[in-house]
Image (cartoon, rainbow, N blue to C red; front, side, top):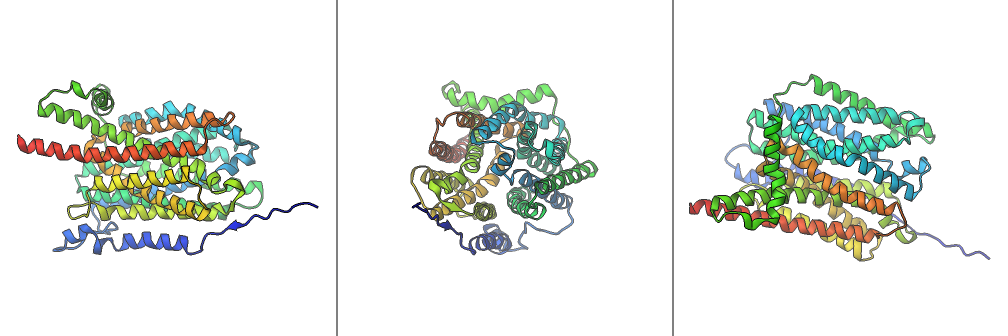
Length: 477
């Protein structure tokens, strides 16, 4: 007589996603009336992130956010199938890890220098290059014979690297040329994260509509992504812009070394700084950029580790859950975190931006540490992952704001691609280990990601102390 083992399916409460989405939308809609900046502007009309006035930068921002949302939809379509796409190509777990590791290695150097090239040729050209990459992979995957080609993974890895900085760089350069208020730029940062989360949810819905039961149905989303890529290319080519190219190559290299690479050396040779206040302040400035590089690398590595391991963690030990229903809750939590960003910066905010960012980093690190080293039920894991994504939604626009404060705009793409290359190198090492008999446990990877986030939180706290110390030195002069 056989033994039948029944598996109980865990079901997410139907109210989870609507409540998270409603909270995010409420945070956006109530912002002009109850935020700290609204109190600061009590004597006049309160600024709104969705201001419908006809200023040149506001017109550019509306078109920019629409284009960025389309790019996020394309990003979501290309990644929505995840592991299932490899399974349909007949690849096992070790083969998946080997292909991803080879892709990461091949795209590591091009991704690292793509930001530098973007700074040289201009952000608009970098955005066009991103759309060309998406058009190429969408066209290749539209044919069933080419859907499993390795070149698709390489192009997608390179496109993701370019996507991480090209649109932000374009926005910052356009804002600088039009000489607008910083509040408009900071609002656009969190709106980008908000719109990206909404677009990723929308890409899942679009894919579900286009996909049918047959294998040919899986080709339609890629054809749709290729069509959106053509729209993006045509719009950027025809759009008017005031952006200009960066400085000459020689001056760029000197500036990049002084602001980005010198920060790493200065962190190991603090004693070489002169006793003079001005020299000490210069060393502190170098270390500020280094902190931003490490903070960006830590959050990128943590998010990548999460997307690799969240599904195996939830269904571990034979547990069963509908992952496609849980996934939108993570993105809705990210929407909520990004919508909370404008409530915590400004002269009347309850915390300084660095303090809030430190708390967000520590919160994200603690949630991953609990997941890594303490066995939890599915419901608890989902709550922890939602908290993690809410922290990520707050961290991303906060880092963009700090980059604007401490880094020259003409070096932005190079600095961001350099920080991402550090995280991608660590990801490549872990993927390479996973391609062979398992040497590193999933809990170890999540634990290292947690340590990176906690360390980044401490570094951001030091950044605030250095800024306060620099102001005191300036007053003493």
